[in-house]
Picture 1 (cartoon, rainbow, N blue to C red):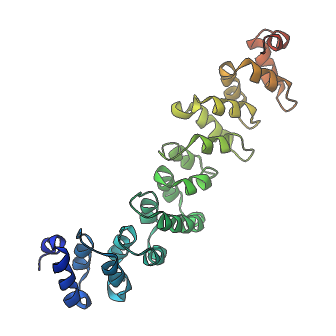
Picture 2 (picture 1 turned 60 degrees about the horizontal axis):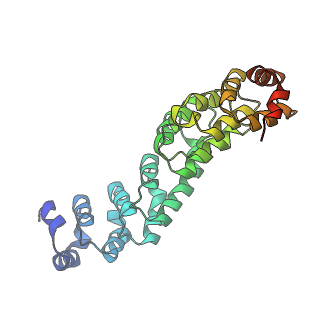
Picture 3 (picture 1 turned 180 degrees about the vertical axis):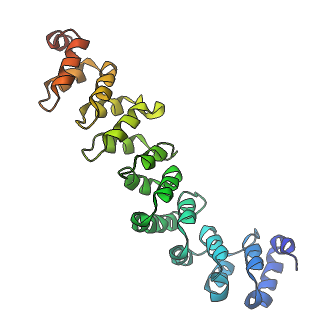
Length: 245
C-alpha cells in the first residue's frame, strides 16, 4: 500500500490495516499512519509502545507533537528528543500544555550544556520558561537574539533592567531597542539601575515625569552625575519640586 493511500484511509480501513500490519510497519509507514486524520489515541499508543517503531527518531518526534498521543506516552518520549526539536515543540500551541511543560523542564536542565551557537538559536524562538534563564546569559549575542523573540514580554525586560546582575551592555541594548526602549517603565528602570551606563541613563531623563525625576534626584543611591543632569534639565530641583502635583 502506498504512503499516500495510508494517509487517506478512512477510520475503519485504518483500523483494519493496523490490526493486520502493526507488527510489520516500517518507519515511513508509521509516519504516514500518524498523518492520517483518523488516527486515534489507541493507535498512537500502540506505535509508542512498539519498541521497534519508537526507536525511529522521526517517529518519536511525530508522536510527541501529535495531539492524539496519550500524554503519558508523549511525556515519556520527550526525554529522547534533541534540543532543536524540543525548542520547536515547546512553543507549538498544538502540543498539549502538559507535554510543553515537560519539555520546558528538560530544556531548563540542559541549557548549561549548550554551545554558544545553540543558545543564540534557542533565544530567538524559545518559550517563556527558557527566556527567563537566557536573559542572564553572560554572552551579549544571546541577549541580542533574545530581543527578537516574539514571546519576550515587558515584564521579562523589567526583570533584567532592574537587576544588579545585569551587564551594562545588555542595558544599553535595551535602551537602543525601538520596541522596548520607549516603554516608560523600562526607561525608568534603566535610570534607576546603577549599572546602566551613565550616558544611557541620562538620555532617558527627559522622558520621565517630573514626579519621578524628583524621586530619583532625592534618592541617595542616585549618582551625582544624574542629579546634575536632572538639575540642568529643569534648571533647578527646587523649581521641579514646586511643580509636582
